[in-house]
Every structure is written in C-alpha cells, then in structure tokens.
Length: 98
Image (cartoon, rainbow, N blue to C red):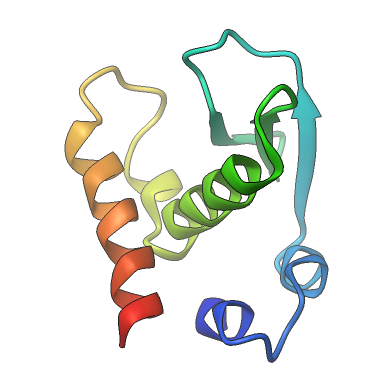
C-alpha cells in the first residue's frame, strides 16, 4: 500500500487515514527532522514544522517506511537506531527506483 502512495495511486492522507496514523507538525530541535511513535494505541508522526516543504515530504516518507517495516513493534525509543534509520531510507529509495 505504501508503494501506492509513491506511485500516486493513493494520496498520503488516504494512507494515513487507512492506517489510523496521525500526522503532526511540531516545533522540534533543528537537528530533529521527525519521528514516529506509538502512544495509547495511536500511531503518531511528528514532523519539524520549520523544514522546507521538500524536506517535510521526504521526512514523512521516511517515517512511513518505519511503519511499513514494523520498526514500532521491534523497539521502544532506543538511541542505537542507526541501522533502522538506514533501513528506512533504503526502503523508500528501493520503492522509488523499482
């Protein structure tokens, strides 16, 4: 279904609604582009509202990749997440290029 968003067959809003994900634009530290988390059985994505529109779009796709790859089920706010970050980036690039 994520591929449908990338191919323009489904809007981002439709995808978020279908998966019951809430997207929020928040004031975050400059070095934090965004993150996805679960709170009381609700999945939320926080995006730094000071980012450019292009960077917001890329960050949203990155966070949705975490959702698709089920990273929320495998860890709870760890600081050793570099591999998960790289995996999410690679997943989006793979879908876009194939």
